[in-house]
Length: 266
Image (cartoon, rainbow, N blue to C red):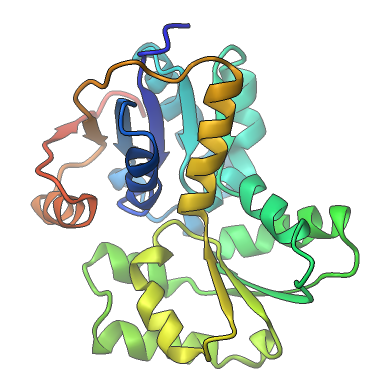
């Protein structure tokens, strides 16, 4: 595997750009190939079979682009399609956004009660409670599906009065009472980090996956001797082009990007 080959990153929409941005910041020499499956967003409302098929087809596309690593920058796809992608791409490093967070939570000595918010599919998969309790039975996990949030963010509503009202309405749910940490189990949610922070007192630790996943990727690439020597241009693909998506992606990623539409993979 050529160490200067790109890192492939995919999500249903712009949420995975939080992970891409963290990777770019930590590993500036790496080339990124981002894929947003905008035709099928949000994944959180789809069946397990559909998500696995979407994810498999995207992974095969990234494989054809000679990606040295595939990052499943979506909690929903990570929860139900990780093994599918590993089976389809056995010679490529596959990273999900769940395991690095579970590792951080379970190695912390001050964690007692964890809250998890995410899409219906992620929460219904029970992946976070299962993985956390398989390592540390003493940690209590409280989960809540927050299905409106990803779509709200995709439509450009974040850090405003609309997003504040919706977020606060979810977070006051009794299901999340008594938590000392909150996992943002959707890669869209860092975009509303400040709105979530406004709801909670300062002692609540709000954990998003982006920076933790980037650190994990650095460790894997270092271990496999696959750290890039020179960066190439980043590329961005979507399954359904929309100007609003491109504007949101440019705003969040922090640089001028051009979306290329790919309609032949599904």
